[in-house]
Image (tube, rainbow, N blue to C red; front, side, top):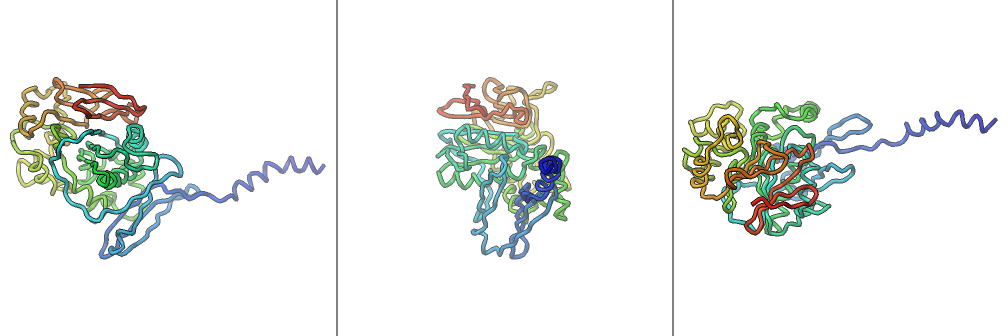
Length: 365
């Protein structure tokens, strides 16, 4: 009889003990780093038993170098740490030719795809340490939007910059249209979780990247056009009107930078208006348009204006793999990472390769 009672009670006892087990508190977003007066506020969002909550810590600005941020990854329970930079300054627009260079674009907040590409191709190890030596990596825009690990992606790029410099390597981040959209108030593609989290924190979403935030300040230091060796990196491309400007990358960046966060869309001159239009470097799609494609002569003009041999873009998916167009002068690195077609472009020994998330390497040129 005692055995029978135990058998009958077992399902109820099991449910009782399961319900009373401690529920894990999981970090699901953050950190958000905000400067106010002489304090630095660091905020995270946690989830515990299906309930989300915001935590806030504050530190004197004088203690900035001692702050260690914890950032989640796509792997449950695995994190990496980030130290805040001592100072932020605008990036140069022109760099020499590195021994090897890896270019990635349009990650769209897909942390797993980014992590995998970097690890499999020897840029970082399993603990997110830089292992690429004096090599350089170029992130060619659209690391924001659509996906659900936007901040994690941004903090990884932010952290790798310092790690690369310590090894005499370099990380470049050229802004795309989605970076600009998030700063100037166009939120069409923002993942809903970020709107929800902003509401929880009692702030508008756009404030996540204002100039009183670490990521907002950092984004404002980046360029929309960058020459590295004999390659011009832009997110979208260079249109004929931008060619007519007949100015190098530094002048384009100087014109555009003050207006990254402008929400009025009222620009002071025709040249700035062009840069922020569909004809600008981070919106232009003419290289890949079927209706009105860029001409070979237009590409030649761009190469002459910027003093390069090649142009590399993202922004427009034209194939399942990285593509070579215009007789080997234009490279498109936009692939559908979320669909499993994750690739990067490797330039090494004067040759161009496409590499994938399996570590495979294919010669392009």
